[in-house]
Length: 587
Image (cartoon, rainbow, N blue to C red; front, side, top):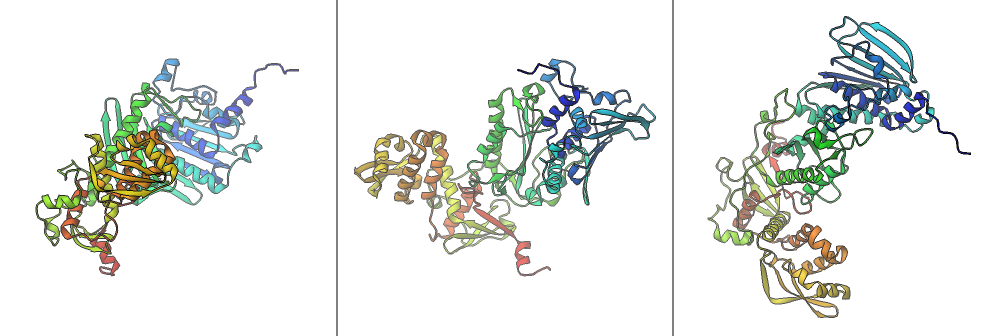
């Protein structure tokens, strides 16, 4: 027989809710710290024992709770953040569901001690497994202390799903690091065993260093963009500063830490042209929009959100980051003190990163010609590099000194020595030319005086014949000349000096893999990158000093010139200090 329908006891209902809210000790830390932030705390202390399984303590200096309100904090669906259903459309606080404390108290021993400024003493209540066991007045400063002990003491099966102590400690550490990035104006202290993390309020650069490492500051650029009601601020790492895992990606929506698929897709698309396959960017970004434009009530842990106009948000994030990355140019070093931010401001008003900055695009060579041809029309360049003081402003990449093994260009600039990967740099320049031409009037093509015959498989010859018109729209004219052969009759003008046979083979290979429709529409950038690779100068190609300088000048005014089409760096800078260190000078 079917069991009769019955109302579950409150303790059981709370334990079921705890299964959604209390996944591990880090989940409790997140909920409690968010409550402290909602209470206006300026300083928050977090302490754990055995990864939080034995004990979690969160103390803040917020406005506190009146004595008669503390028992209500343990009631399910009791909250001060919302009153009616209309409030769900404009949620401005981090916590609002009224489930966290009730769920935590159902699977642990919880003590809340709090005091408001209007009362002389505080009040303490202890709940064990959902049952009130103690309440009394106590001495306590203004603010709230929540102590959680013996997690899952009454549900031992849940304990079996916890990881090792070290793993739980790392999870708590990651939660606190996310929250301290969310609120630069709040001081944090985290104690886990012998490990102590203390972060004073307002020290933005120090927080970035502690969470992302010092290398992030030197290899990132500030973002500050507003469009209508949308605002995006923060820092994004340059494509060369990437990770094997997506473990240093922090995104905040109205101060809330989120992991959103739409946001992740927009950021991946922004880095698509410049990031090496299989690598992940590093960023700390803050998106602000009206509360009614985002629904945060779609997941029990509030990690996911839903945007009212998802397309607008996606395009805004993608456009802002894509433009920011493309505008980064080599630039002279900025003063060390430029890193300093105002103590009370969570984000800089303007980009203030040393070493790299965005600047307006300046006059560049015609996109329809190669840098070798540009040399013929440009003003004569000096055969030797001028003194550093003469080229600080006008030549961030300096002037060429020599070519090493036909692969690298050695140049001198104000900071020291610049090493340029000749092929990788020209590959990027060619790629950007092709994109500009397509965006304008289509690819300029050049008819080959002698067609290049290419031996291919029968399937590839069939592809070339069936899709000749579509391929021709990309500036590559192929004609089938036999069962297993084709001829290349026209190529994009920018690729005329490249490896035509290899170009035809790779284009047909990608057509076979992705299909004509996908490749020419959704993956057109990938096709252009392949074409640019074959149209770039090859290794062991000897360049004159004028040609090398022309390449350096064009890099300085080309978008994304710091990375090739596959995300690898095109140049690296060695300062005089680094060079001196190699020879033990100044030790």
